[in-house]
Length: 52
Image (cartoon, rainbow, N blue to C red; front, side, top):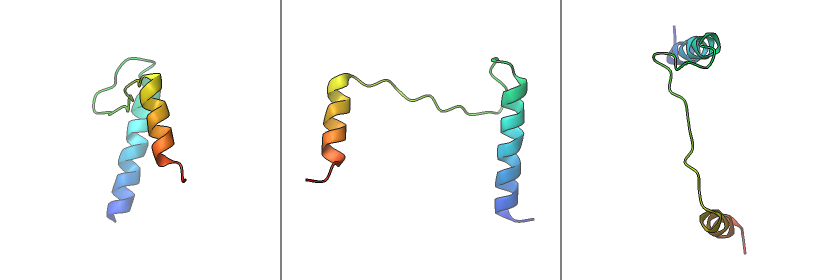
């Protein structure tokens, strides 16, 4: 089996574990939680990536 298959299989296992956890933190699953930004930071970031 290829690396891609193993990666997809692992992702599916994590998704199933997350679904079955009912809000509790399941073991072995990494959840992405972005850090909140202040309004000024967000405006500066958006202005810096827009083309002139």
